[in-house]
Length: 422
Ligand code: SF4
Image (cartoon, rainbow, N blue to C red; front, top):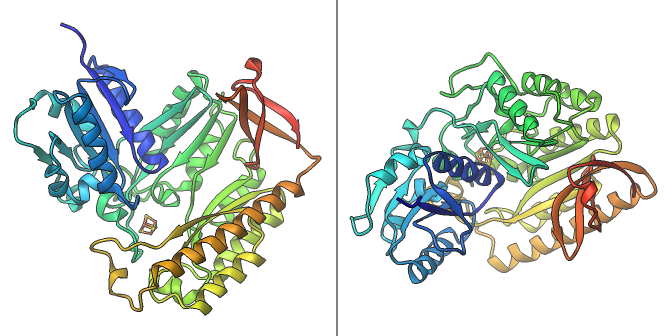
């Protein structure tokens, strides 16, 4: 019998990409052959995201495309949106199987139990019952790997649906993570990006109830894995980014001088309404300590504009805070309403056009910050890890402090760390 074929499409964040990779490896171990999403396949898996604004529209669109191209193929929808709105998804014509947070890694078993034409099967339990941890990683052309070490979140920020989609904070153990990192090194991976939903909360264990290990233990242990030359911390909450973690990174040979720290607002009033666990003063302290110990460090900032109750003055407070802060780039998000979140109760709502104007203002600021940061390092020699990906005969890589370098493709530089004058 010919092997079954499977194709994937991922919406959303790096965590979703690493989980799609893990699901793909599971199915390949069961004898499936992987195909590109544009190709013909027996099974199509769409891994969805709840943070994407148009998750439902995108999902419908993708299912329609599959139906036109390949009406006999099985269509499986999983991921955060599948956990949050399983019935809505099951009602999309052409969907055969909906897998929530607890079931996505049991996909092989579920596929054995369904056939095209059966009524849509929903496997999605209450998110409070989700526990256990599935280690996942993605390997991008052997150069960099996104390694999931933590999942879920036990915070309750008022705008966020992630705790409802992924459950309470859980994580892998230090020992398991070391084993995975060692296996990645054996595959030739040079750089690992540690990912999670609330990464700094690492240490809760697979069931979310442990307290023997923490994020600092993890990064100290990873430093000793032979073969991995670089680590990055994808994103860490400011209240969990301790002085000890900053000090360790500053002394480390392997943890890159690069942090991504969600701020969300520079107004303490809005931070309170968002139910964030810090004030702007703490954020500024963290940035100042990082820049004192590592003046060359890149710092990225997440910020949300147009949160309910954000007046012009509140926004200007965020703007001036960010102008003063020695950070390198911003990821700007426009607030959008999410079902079942506390933020829906906050008034007044900011008009959409005002949200978009504020977004534009901060994006312009981000551009200037990035230019300034790059210019500050002009003429310096820094280490760049070049990646295999090439477009128009150009290749790219990042310096230790996350400045992107583009240069004509040279095969001998792929997956090599090269000294580069900026
Ligand atoms: S820390 Fe807040 S914003 Fe981040 S995942 Fe948890 S609840 Fe959502």
